[in-house]
Structures are given as structure tokens and as C-alpha cells.
Length: 288
Ligand SMILES: [Zn+2]
Image 1 (cartoon, rainbow, N blue to C red):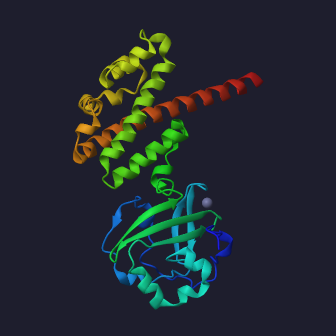
Image 2 (image 1 turned 180 degrees about the vertical axis):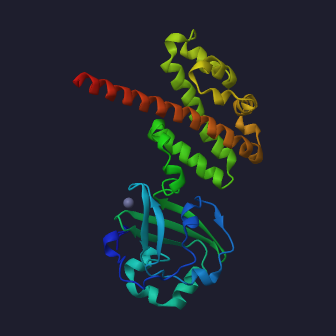
Image 3 (image 1 turned 30 degrees about the vertical axis):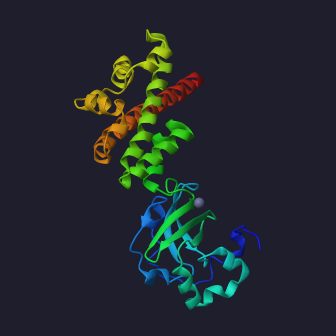
């Protein structure tokens, strides 16, 4: 017996077609890790194994929605490895489910061939918690991943953006704002570096400025919409420390700050596209 999960060993095709499983939903896939999922009716838990349940989910590798088929796996893969018939015995399964501190997992394969694995921990007889998932909830979120301006952020900061949006959608706003603030500070620094020659300030001095003062310095290089009425208040609150703000206060600041970030990125993207178009036109004209 080894601990490796070999996707090739599972059958993702021969099952009862159209079988509906109430437990596995897109919402579950997008639920953050370590959040207690309460009031899990035992009846749903006992409906394992899940026999080729099919649902449509977003695949970030293909950048589109795919049909994922869940393999019949289960409560504890050590049992699966040692006794393949374990899952035919519902009463054993049921008693196993009532034990605290047990784990179970699901694997699925999409029609494009990409995989999904989710690991759960049983907290008590009515509560479970997702403790692992690959691809992450951020990568499984279609709405977040389809934004074209994300590529302007680079891989690391794009992942911060996705985390921020996902945390916000689950009302974890202090965490969400921490990521957004990092992105915003990075964009301000990028803007400084691009226009350094025209700004009469050193990088170190710029870094030491308060957020509002950085913005004032960069005003002519940033979209004017992010200086509209009300934004000063947003920047001063964010700058004075997210750690002093409540979840609700962070929730109120989230959308304006996210929109400021998006405006900067969209403008960058548009400028790049305009430059590309002009270069292409220049080349065409040279041919004449
Ligand atoms: Zn795929």
C-alpha cells in the first residue's frame, strides 16, 4: 500500500448517467478551506459513494467550463487501497462517517482531461471542513479568472487579486483588503518607476510617502476617475491601517479599492493595445 493517488486507477466513465448528488455543487468547490460546513445532514453523507456524479465547473487551464465526472472514492483512501469492496458495505461506511477526525476525499476528471481533488475533514457528525483542494478555489472561479486585465498584474499579483475576490465573496474582508492593498501599492510603485524621470523624488522618499501623497505625486499618470470625490477617504482609511478596521468597514472599502485597481489595469491594457495597433499600422504603411 502506498499513499499515492493514481488517477488512472479510477473509473470516471462507467456509472449511472445523470445521477444527482446534492452534496457536490459548484458552491462547495468554491467554499474556502478551513471554513466549517455546518448542518451537513447525515443523509447526504450516507449517499457516498458518489458514482460518477457529473457537474459543470470552470477549468482554469482550458479557460472554459468543462464537465467534471467524480470517481467513486470515499471516506478514507487507506481503506480504498486495502479493500476495494469497502464501499459496497453501507453500514461500515455509515459508522465510519460518525467518527470524528476522519478524512474523506473526492477526485474528478474533466472532459478535457484535467483533474480535481478535494480533501475533507469530519469535525463532528454534522460538521465537515474542506482542508485541501487542487486546483484552488481561486483557480476554479470562472468570474475572477476571465478578466483580461489580470495578465497585466503578473502571476503573483494576479493570484493575490483572485484571493482577494474570493475572500470578499465569503465576507472575509480584512483578509481581502490586505491583498488588495498590496496590489494597489505595487501599482503605485510601478507607476513611479515608469515615470521616475519626470518626478522630482527618489524611490526611497517616494516609498515613505503616505498613500494619499503618493497618489498626488502620480496624479497626471493615473486614470482621473480614481481621484473622484470620496476616494480620498478610501485611501486614507486603507493607508491608516487595515488592522484598525472591522470586517464591515473593510467590506465597504473593498469595492471602491478594487475598482481603482481595475481602472489602472484596464488603462494600462488599453495603452498597450493602442501601441500594438500603431506599430502594426506603421509596418503596413512601410510596405506601400
Ligand atoms: Zn481543462
